[in-house]
Image (cartoon, rainbow, N blue to C red):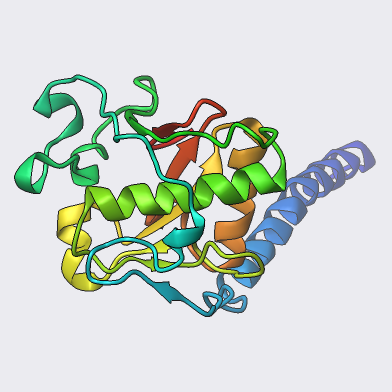
Length: 210
């Protein structure tokens, strides 16, 4: 082997090592990720339980709602549950292209500014009462009071099949609402498909997504 052939061989060896090194680094990173610590445990929080009639226990502080309005649509489109009640379980089959479904409406607080914390607190309370009226007898576990942490709505195990979800988070239907939803459920140890978003707008419309 002459000097020129030796140089060509060395060049090929170095080129092969240059490709191999990043692959080895990537493999080491994947192994490290796979053996990392488990995700954060779901945050615990003090809960408020709804009485047997399904109305939030502090509902005396919530203004009376106008009658719930449910959009006209076929059962196949939105799903109808027990006694003709709207069934979230019939909504999960929608495609991303179809967008969220309008579930109903509540009276928005006319004296509060949309996008502010007081408006959001009032809408949380009204939607919680709306859920209680929609599903009488279901003892929803609510974490919607000021200072409470954790997912907003939890459904008892025995009612999950009827309602169609076990956990739900109430958020404004906006880009910032979506970002907050994603950040919070991740911090509480949930996967995105484990928590049903219930969104609202400034007109009091309630939807099943963003």
